[in-house]
Length: 64
Image (cartoon, rainbow, N blue to C red; front, side):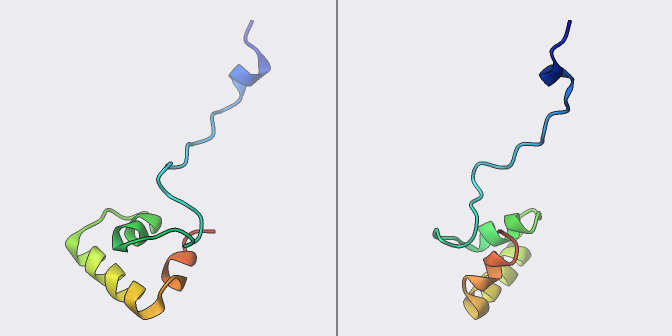
């Protein structure tokens, strides 16, 4: 007989390499990944400019 925990759906695992907020060092690739996008040269350049302009606030809007 299956236990009750076997019948409950599994929660999706969060990536271990993403952190909350911008309390740690971050780079344009982190910002692109926080948006749920694949890092491409164009996206990385846009992210670099956004970080340059807005600082930590650029990342904080995507991570709690």
